[in-house]
Length: 463
Image 1 (cartoon, one colour):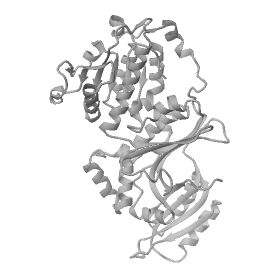
Image 2 (cartoon, helix red, strand yellow; image 1 turned 90 degrees about the horizontal axis):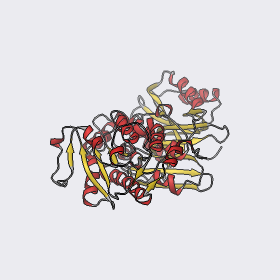
Image 3 (cartoon, one colour; image 1 turned 180 degrees about the vertical axis):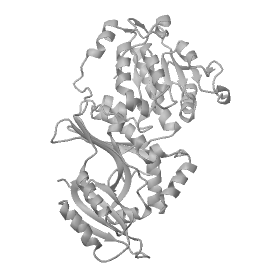
Image 4 (cartoon, one colour; image 1 turned 135 degrees about the horizontal axis):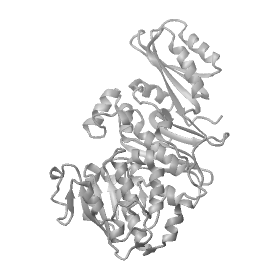
């Protein structure tokens, strides 16, 4: 994932795409340019100016319309600019990108890495879509690519996978990777709020954007899961190949029914290698019921959690603050510190090593799965809202029987109106595609007030 060293003064800071053949660390100072001065960027700048890692100096800050961004607590010797070319012309060893999006961040990343410098980012979309390409560039040209802040904010999950768990063979990763969705769902659970009210509260508190689509539709968590697939499961997976489902289908009444089942509801990102079919990866982001004694259920507010299951080490759990300027900035500056330490420990890099790095095939190298599917075999929760009449349960049972699905339980809470009667059917473990076909058949019946809602129940008994 990483290379070694940086370039010398004139060679290193040219924008040539040719690999640098010699690297010098005669100067111990590691100079840093910060690209982006938003919430996270400002938190990074505060750490780098108030308590910088040893040997690290912030020298440049880039932002559009920089005049309105200048802060008097930034030291006078830091150069402000709104011209990105000033960053690439500067004698810096590390570029930190905190602007987000695929472009122009992707172009900046490629220019940085092909010049032999190191690139640090919290840009999940960039790494999820182009991480493999950028890692290759870093290895080829002698820089480093680090992106701890791109997944789970302040939780050091990627460094743990790179260093502490490298000897294990991780086959499953699951977790809560989006703090906005977790805040919304726990608000609905704790206060009985509607989805719309919980979302409005999240927006008022700054947890959700004005346009919350990426969060509530699962796209943000999907990008993070794609990164974890690469780092934990060694699976090269593009985000569009991971199934994602909105949390908008969840209503306050679902938490009441879930509680009777000993569960709550969370947005769960999950990926695992198929135990029976080699090369088949199951991956999805969707709302799901989880048992209240599960670590996933105990994550409240905007917190994140990642659960890893390895062949040798069993289950390992990481949890903590998953978003915000503070936690993410700690991850970003920790990446900078790691690069600085490596530079200090390697005063001269061997050009021959730089040339052969791309050819070194790691036994844990990422592979492209033969098949990627969002299908999991689990119990399921089905919520119906109907105009009550005789025969509804029989009709649902008949559809389930035709698809060879066993009903486990039927739950109903007292209702004020028979015209909009909510009730729940739980079914035993079955493939989600089979259940979807059954639900589609049931959805065509004429007693529905709302379309049926289907949520997997995670952590059920083994098959």
